[in-house]
Length: 165
Image (cartoon, rainbow, N blue to C red; front, side, top):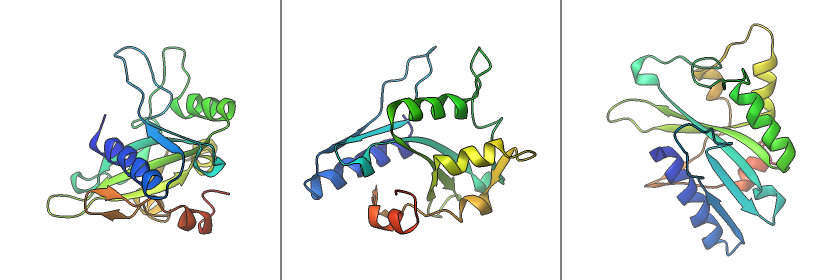
């Protein structure tokens, strides 16, 4: 589990606890030769919080200019792309899907994180001639604010941004 995933899970669970809401975020144990559906699963009776989140991190300070569909996502032994496998899982489970992207900005600079609705990611993936989402495009999506050692879960802000409908 990456630090980004761990902190995101802890942030969701702290949010549920503080708001006295029934809900839990967790990470399924990943086994060496089996793929997992998503990095973070969030379960709640409130449909706004029944979601699946795939997490990706890229190092802007090391020259990354985009999140590439071939480089940053996997293809399984049957040729199924990770975006297609996750889309199928989200459809079958009824979860709302998101791609959380962490941008590592370099030593001494704060990391940035953004939430991309899975439907937007799929649209970009299927768009002909679009093998990536640029850092600039990522930064146009709602940021996941950070306060000391946790991310702020802001469903009202996401609703305003139409991430959760």
